Length: 60
Ligand SMILES: [Zn+2]
Image (tube, rainbow, N blue to C red; front, side, top):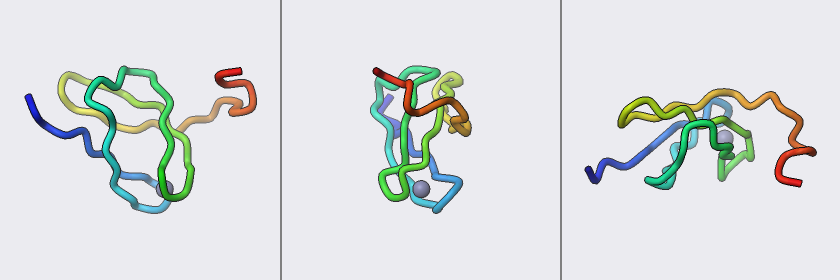
């Protein structure tokens, strides 16, 4: 149950950890280059999907 959710940025290759309560569909960004991704949770594994939405409108 203590598995860490490590994902890798497809742009710069940085590996970073997601919070263990991350939810499917959540937006995250690479701490190194700032590339944005949608988190996809499948069981106990996570992956990143390229975020193509309008960043300017998100969370306003
Ligand atoms: Zn990156």
